[in-house]
Amino acid sequence: QVQLVESGGGLVQAGGSLRLSCAASGRTSSISYMRWFRQAPGKEREFVASIAWSGANTYYADSVKGRFTISRDNANNTVYLQMNSLKPEDTAVYYCQATPTAPRAASFWGQGTQVTVSS
Image 1 (cartoon, rainbow, N blue to C red):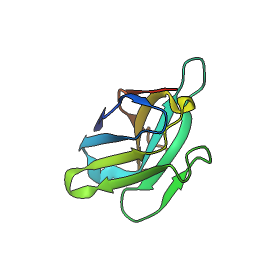
Image 2 (tube, rainbow, N blue to C red):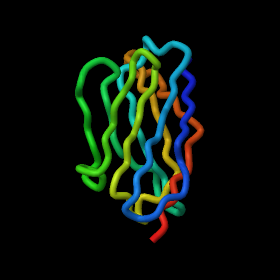
Image 3 (cartoon, one colour):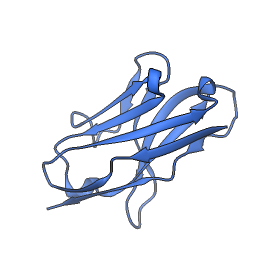
């Protein structure tokens, strides 16, 4: 089992920045990838960014490319999402997900953190 706890959300004006954190605990050695998703009111949950737990591979949704940066600190089992040039359409609950290495194993999710960007 892997436990994930997000933090760092809040209210920010358009153009501002926030940094989200996702602290992982438990069987972190079983993690293959870490991902951030977000879900705005009335919309489906969507992929934001991902990073390999070991290695440098990162991927971003087109909507956040050039503005958001995903990074990790393996020593502290923490993944970050640095969000710059925030827009009102970035308003959502942001969730952290851990994908296990084992095939067909269920992913783990955090409880989410609210990000609100005012215009």
